[in-house]
Amino acid sequence: MRKLPRAVRLDLVAPVHRAPVAGATLLAAGIAAALALGLAFEQKVEERGRLDAELGARVAPRHGPPTPESLALSAESAAIERQLAVPWTRLLAELESASHDSGGRVSLLQIEPDPAKRQVRITAEVRAMNDALVYLRRLQRSPVLRHPMLESHERRKDDPDHPVRVRVSAEWRT
Figure 1: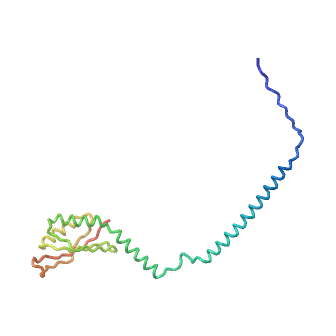
Figure 2: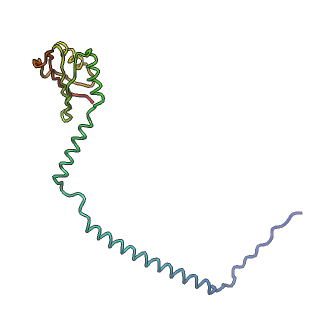
Figure 3: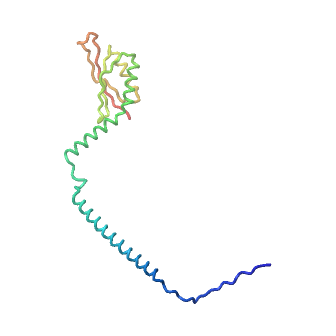
């Protein structure tokens, strides 16, 4: 046997119940709490505005005209940055390799980089001028250096072996 659905009764004209006293009290308490919270929030916003104004009056402007100290610091920072931009590892490895390829006939004495011009000056001593020319040709084949040139050479008469001191200049590649 089949069950029939139960009938649903709709009462569209039901009597309106009055709100109990507890509901009205709870509503009044909620409104009072919302007002108290709103007043406290407004006071905090005013206090924050006052503190921001005080702070703004006390703090000096951050970006004023450059001072001599800041200009000197900026120049020093730029010089350090240029020094760090020198490809030291590759440059020194290439000079060491070229010296090694010369069979120990070249002694490096000084390496003077000029980062602003991207140049390096190399001072070395060799036993004979021919050794200096072989070293210079080796540096000209270097992938790190561009245009190595012999700047000067002089025979050291104060040394009993009379070595030749040479200066080579070149640009370095990045």
